Length: 139
Image (cartoon, rainbow, N blue to C red; front, side, top):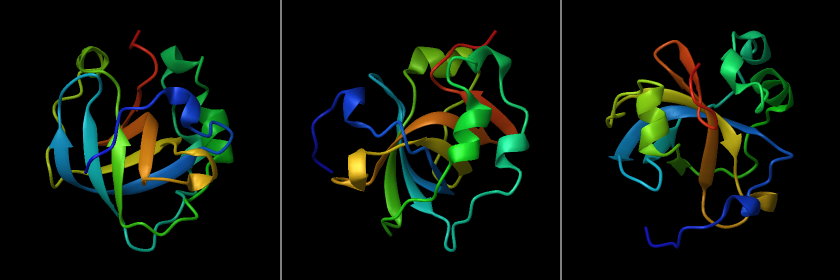
């Protein structure tokens, strides 16, 4: 895949998206870790998403409010590039390198009107029963 790094302003923060699936590729480096995700067939919003226990330290990026507004992508791409946080923040959360084969969920943003590449800037990572707030540091 060949595309230039972009600023955060190109993402549509009015429409949080839910994705889940299997990691097919992992690039654990700065400026932020990236994953390639093969989206689960028949993707659905988890019915309990907004009622989950959200990290208190990520109050500035209100997970419960984002989850209540979460939608599924309109586009039908099976593979998405997931942009995670910088490695220093992932290490602070004690997120070990996510390897291909792992199953994860993501709540985040894609480009306005879902145009361009299938890219999701992850605000929250759902891994092994935990929720990680990627735009904040753990308390």
